[in-house]
Length: 413
Image 1 (cartoon, rainbow, N blue to C red):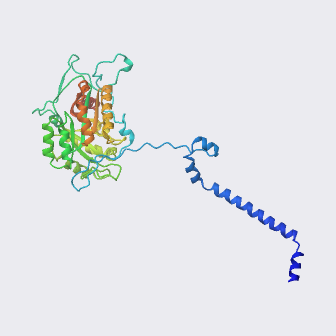
Image 2 (cartoon, rainbow, N blue to C red):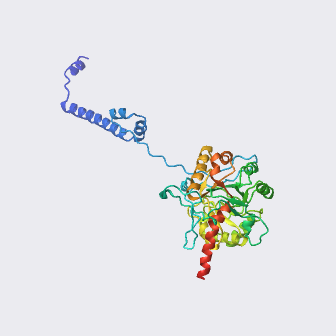
Image 3 (spheres, helix red, strand yellow):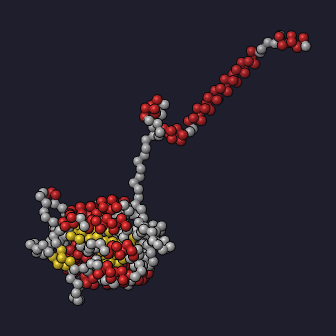
């Protein structure tokens, strides 16, 4: 025991061994700090998340740069669906989702007129503004009698010289006021809301879907109420997420199939002046398909209203080539199902009518749309406008152009 105690007292540290141990300790401490620094740099998500909640002053104290919020993308237009039905069947969409440029005012629509040397002179139908620089461009032709305030159009009767669409057109006396045509698409499927639409102050243009039920009865009621009729023909949309309905016109199919589907729709009821496209962003962009449609409309003496669901629609080109009366939509009323937004679009309708002499708006039989339209049609300043059916604008805008184009073609031959 005494020997062990004396051995411990006589123990002397080894300097070389101590130096090695100290060195290893220092290396370990260095590695620890290094790992902590590396791990801190490798957690950007946490630091960025925190920085978004730090005020600029605190961020400066902590040497943290606050994250700048990126601009939010403009929301895309949504597919228009009807209000819920009592039936268990899933209701088909009223309209496909469209690019903002086709929905927002001013929309990128197809001009109803292509200028030619032989075109008649067009002048504003409203009173001339004080300044020449403020003079709006109107596409309406000069009235036959400069002193007249009323021009009579489209009297229904047994006149066999009239094309079929004019025989079905509403008779109307036109004034020199800016003109507005309101078209309600997708009529007939929701019969309750369609019936409410027919009770609105007119004349409106009501376009009934080919596959709606009881079309003969529904359209007769609409005509008795003083509205003009059109046929709403399903055409192929660009998106496969929406169902346009049965007997849809498809691109890339044999011509016989297109004609068969179109004829089926054209035979569902009578008394309409022509057709407009239900959806159809893909089909209306196909010139050959649109030529086929126009050839059938030409045979039946009907007109075409382009709903303009595609910026590349070939409706006007095909109609002019075949010789079908044509006109295009200017404004969509209810791509946003909000009554205030719809009222804003209705204000745009009046603004456009003042600017170019007329405006064409398309809506759908939805609760907000019907409510907004009812109050809008009863506004006091509507006395400064004239509500007209589509046929009246086609006679004023499209027919003089078609006659001029075909007169030129005849002389050239």
